[in-house]
Image (cartoon, rainbow, N blue to C red; front, top):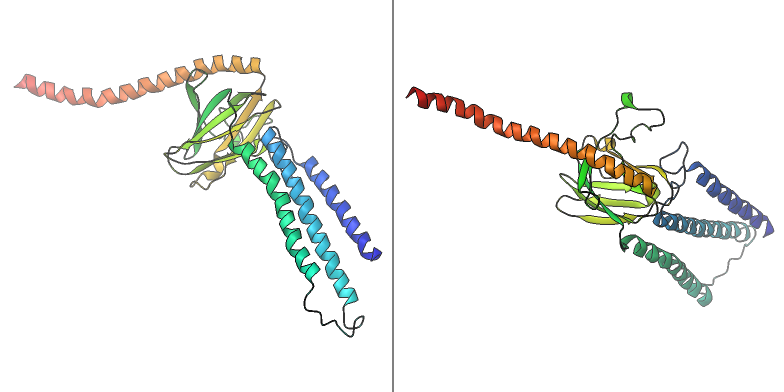
Length: 297
């Protein structure tokens, strides 16, 4: 029996080492080479997701090792050579009760933290600010209704325009900026097809459906820039609509808001003037021949 316990103990040790190693390889904010674990957590929700993931890994590893040990015992002790006269026992009340009750207890052990995690994700606390997110084919639009009601579009930075330190297929021209340690409510919708707003380091993944407003939340606890992507197949350029969120101090956020209001308000005004000019152009060109005809008559 001890000969089987030693490999089992070794396997548990290898599993624990792999968990710690995978945590080291999993960077925060973006994927890393050879990553085999979740991205680092920077929100309370993602921290709980990490805890739940670790719990599940322990449970499934224990079950696999337990079954492996039982199979090894059966192979060694109950083969034809070691046990030439097999038992004809067909029922064992204790074993039948055990293999019914123990799985139920395991499921309850899984269900309790699972429901707590769902409650944490789905019950939005009182927000400090709101960001409205709209998915398009194939870019994102953001609005800040609580901070001056301005908005902007966010597009992928092409590979030839990347600056040092910007990750390929994740960097954008206009980042979402939020303050740290503030509860941010996001309202997510779509202007065309179904998209999905996913931020792995935040523990946020929510569908953007046309004609519907979905809500989620996050509270970033560390300054930095964090990346995500659309996680719903949405057409030809689905792979090219990344998300970039920069978490800054409250003072830096206030300074960015002041700059953003001026920057994006002037851009909106310019776009509005171009739209007005385009609407007036057909009318003026149409009135020219009509006026000339009236004068000729």
